[in-house]
Image (cartoon, rainbow, N blue to C red):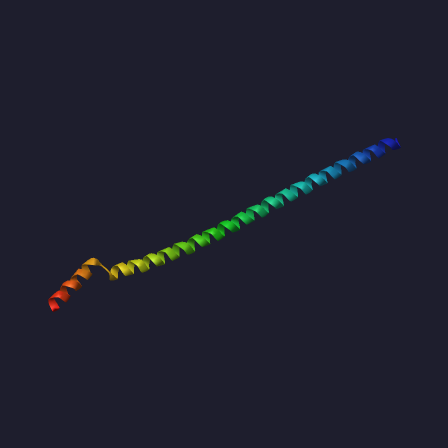
Length: 88
């Protein structure tokens, strides 16, 4: 009888230890997945911010180039040359 009780107690202890180990492994895997998801989200947010900054810079450069084009329009240049000819 005592041997049977000892065996049952040992089996219960082994089952409890196995359940605890499985729970620990699941918790560690969930933590790793959550950390990876958070890192991916942070990297994506940083990339989007960099992309927005680059787009703003490109638009600023385009605006500057468009202003230069407005200053150097060929028709205005031709008109100024013709006016200069008439003034001579």
